[in-house]
Length: 82
Image (cartoon, rainbow, N blue to C red; front, side, top):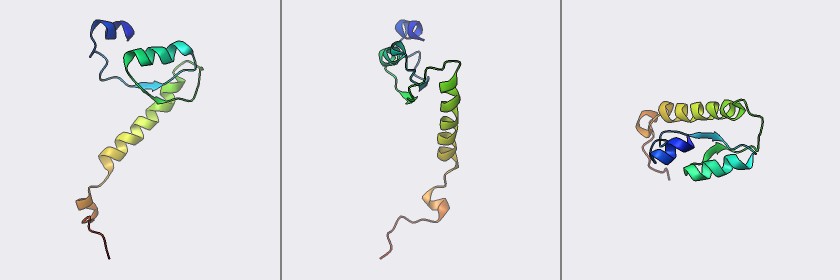
């Protein structure tokens, strides 16, 4: 990812960083890419454990965004009751 970003600055605009590893180089790389991680639990387990935790977070956010009713659909007019 870093090489691609160096070649074309907008190449990673669509990418998200799942988590920040406890390894110092990882935080520096994320900063260099101008990104923020979704979670930071200080893990250094490897093998995609951060992604395994971040994916359900993203799914829940998408579900809230797409499944939430509008005020109109929920029958809320936005006026306060006295």
